[in-house]
Structures are given as structure tokens and as C-alpha cells.
Image 1 (cartoon, one colour):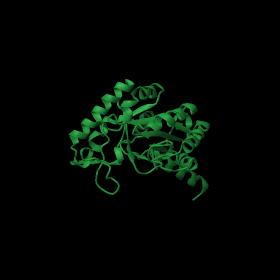
Image 2 (tube, helix red, strand yellow; image 1 turned 135 degrees about the vertical axis):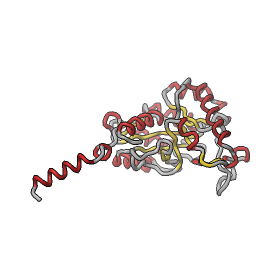
Image 3 (spheres, rainbow, N blue to C red; image 1 turned 180 degrees about the horizontal axis):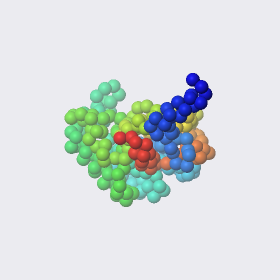
Image 4 (cartoon, rainbow, N blue to C red; image 1 turned 180 degrees about the vertical axis):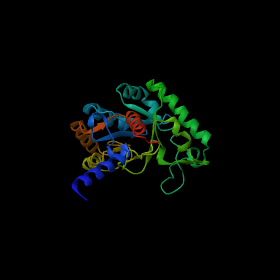
Length: 271
């Protein structure tokens, strides 16, 4: 086959491909990837260490609040201030129910055993949590959700499927860098849960997301304290890197990111 015919064949093949296969997933202002900085359980170390660090570097995070927990009630005005700063308050259920079965779950009290709950009970958990969050930040639109402990099943089966239409995005524990934005289910976004890692290890995941053109969702717990903890130094090293590379990585609330993802997926023909 001559060079002209080869060129024509390649051009026709390219035209036959769907648009999503020919073009990379687009992030705002040409950035390479998105980075979600999320913090579960509304812990004291987040108010004491994470929020000041985010403010220092001008970055926005998402805090998943558990209204029934005493640290939330004791520092409610501080959480209102977190929302006024422009950070997102996300839904993490009312009481943080988890499966009490399996190794390492001895800490789950019987009345918070997700396996024994009904769909009606877990719906009530998330609905009441939304009302509480609205009292803190005044936001009346749909929010994002992170499943406590990453567990998905109540007595009747998978509850995530039953509440998915209520939320713009749902994080589920497991995985780290999203492999394909077009194939991503907004109700099943992987959440990396760092514990005892270094700043360099966190940055490596960001760089991997940049190479793939996708996103990485961090779900921190303790920052320099509490449990599932990352040191203040490792956390700040990550934030400093993101602040120095704002033109490459889009770091904002998970809500804003998932609103963008849904629009892009729709525009690219994802059903």
C-alpha cells in the first residue's frame, strides 16, 4: 500500500473512533489531573492541624461530618467556620454505622451494626445528616457522601445503590488513582485512606494521576493525631507540592470536582 493510501486509511480510522477515545478527559484550565483532599469523621486533629494547613496553602478540602459524635457537638461553631472558609461539609451518615462482623470490627456497637439495619434506617441516617449539615453551612443542594468504613450492605443488600441518586458523588474505600474517567461511576469513586505514609508517597499518587490524566481521592482521618493518622509533616509536604503545582493539579472540593466530572461524562457521551 502506498504512503497516500496508508495516510487515508489512518485518517478514516481516526474519524471512526468515538470522540471520547480520541480526546483526553478535560480538566479546568488544561490541568493534568484532579486531587481530592477529604477528611473523614470530623476529628479534632483535622480542626487543629489540617484546616490551618489548608488555609496556609490556599487549598480547599472536603470534611465528612458525623453529627452524633461528641467532638462535632463540642466544636460546632468551628465547623461552621470551616464551611465559611469555603471548604465542603460532606455526608458521612448520622452515627457512622459499620459492619460489626469480621476481624478488627469488635469496636462497632450492636446498635450501629450496619448488617442489622434496613434500607429505611440507612436512608434516615443520611437524610437527617443532610439536615444537620444544612444547619451548619446553609447549603441546600445535593452533597457528596463517603460510606463509613467503606461498607455497603444493610440487611436487605447494597444500600449505596438505594441512595446514589441523592448525591453528586460517593466515595468508597478501596483503590487509589482512578484508571479511566469515562468509565468512572460517580457513585463508586475509589478512596485512598493514607495511614502512616510519607509525603513523598502521597505525592507519587498525585503524579500517577497526572500521567493518567485522571484523579486521586485522598480520604484522611487523623492529621498528626487521632487514628489512621498521617503526620503533620507528610500532610504539609503534600499540600506544599499541590500549591506549587496549581497549574497541573486541580485541588478543590469533591463536590465541585464531581459536578465537573458529571458534565464532562455527559458531554463525552457516557450514558
